Length: 352
Image 1 (cartoon, rainbow, N blue to C red):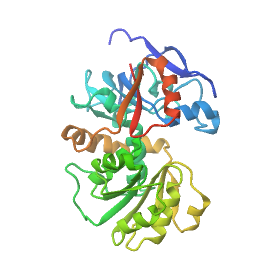
Image 2 (image 1 turned 180 degrees about the horizontal axis):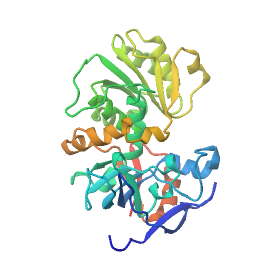
Image 3 (image 1 turned 30 degrees about the vertical axis):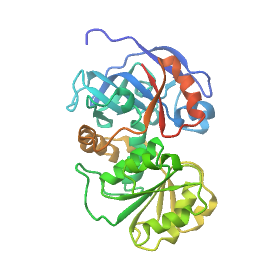
């Protein structure tokens, strides 16, 4: 490239500053193993507005000014030394890494973002940028919790779907959420039967993603219902999304009548009572540290070995549906406010 493009970003200049400040940002060329995306669509996640609202209580390692944003999709405009999987002009979906690296150039909420090659996948023509932008943080969080040796350590997903032992089950709560929608599909591709929870209006949606059983998380009999669904099956653990879900999973794992890989709950979000800690079940918060996004991480295997083919063949689909709430960096703060009010089986997205 002869002349660097002019970049702009939605900056968080200091702790708890509202609104985000739209202004110039340096265009950063890619280093070895990196590419630069011209972003077309950006997904909104609770971690972004929570960091803005809570300040240094959350992600205290981040230095200001910073550009937040994890979910990006767009077009490759430059590739760094050693990059083999992408070329200029490729359509790509990727995980932006600034909330881990504290490097503003790796933040999603700007026109041009530096992406690590192993945290990106080619985007088939039939999938829009808006659809793709629902995926990256969900891919990161779901993959790390399901497949990392530090958490549930499930077998990795495969294309075609891994057949293996069909008596294995995993419980994934919050199946209609962005992370839940991704986790269900990954677990099914890895050869596990999935039991999930959702509100009744989303039962069919969650089953369409691959869950065999879906139960109402507000039901008074939900613990008994889930226990009955996994009775006699080899239970590989629980993946918790949503307030109170860890308590539900702890009760089920403690009562399970059948073999268990390990009595562990990978906690993606939500609160849980101390009672879940008194059942002999290990509740472990999914921590996204630098190792979790490294070139040899579980997430890198998903992006490099599974996602390209799974997306191309329709075995894995971006879910939930994007809800575009505006265009331009100046709309991101408004999108934060919309996301804060809660969404169901939707993902808030801003176009660029």
